[in-house]
Amino acid sequence: MPKVVYVHPDGSQDRLDVPEGTSVMQAAVAQGIVGIVAECGGSAMCATCHVYVDPPDAESLPAVGADEDEMLDCTACPREPGSRLSCRIVLTADLDGLTVRLPEKQR
Image 1: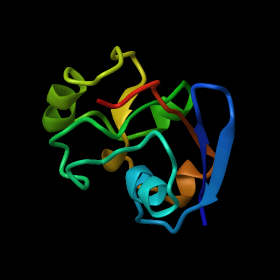
Image 2 (image 1 turned 90 degrees about the vertical axis):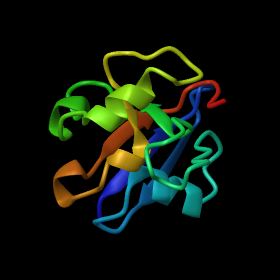
Image 3 (image 1 turned 90 degrees about the horizontal axis):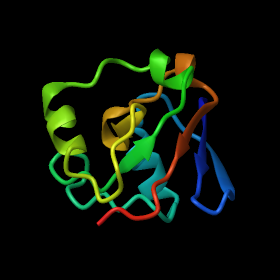
Image 4 (image 1 turned 30 degrees about the vertical axis):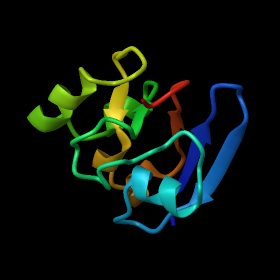
């Protein structure tokens, strides 16, 4: 089962074992991770599951799609090169150990 590390703005971390095929957003919501709001439930319509993914993890992810790219322009915190919607990051064995940084706010 892949592991995901959620790094909060204060530097604290939550580490989760997540079944393959689950999105980073779904795992966060299921485990009550503060900092992932997910208002639209994973439809890439709200940008409230915004995360920052640092290299080299970002290079392991599929390319940003048009819908995700558009929503990343609407995030509450500034968009960075590693900005992603966590609803669009589906975990596989290849992403074991993925680390995502949570922004200071989502709305």
